[in-house]
Length: 260
Image (tube, rainbow, N blue to C red; front, side, top):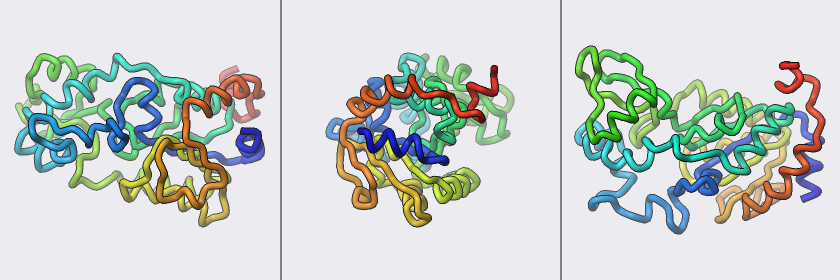
């Protein structure tokens, strides 16, 4: 743990990459863990099938019925110790921001102002016909009422702005992630199995450009051998880090200093 603290203090440029394992501490099931969403079918359908763009376009009603209990109950989840600690590190100027595979908005709730969502976000939705944009707060009550959201202007089908299987990741975010990872002196990889490409390969940009990787994940990952440090228990790591983070003085260019 002291080595990790030293890396956090000495690294001028730190980028964080997070996966579903971070949010399990908030009560959100992950995808590939032992009790993950991918292990259990829903009405005879695999979650991977439900989250494919072809399935959404052909069976939007079934998608929204499934998503009602997962995507459209985000307001009941709160940031956990990992989200909050990362928020404090961001506010004190120790991390540049967070790249996340998650779509639960908890990093923002936890205080990180720079969050790049590699797999999109349900914070916004759009009509597939006319392009009108809708907020999560507008669409969630419709889905909770067991209805399929349609555009108020043209009656077109509304889709959440998450990346479905069969869709491409946002190239601008992906390119920025590669650039930031390449420039990072330290990459914290938290709660990701690192199996979904191309996002899963991003931490290697840090390694290839001379930076260090710290891995914290319950299960083994394909990149463990490249990590400077490897931990398995996110909760334990951040329970030890959090009190120490509170003792850190904000850096001069940190958001905390800028608002004073």
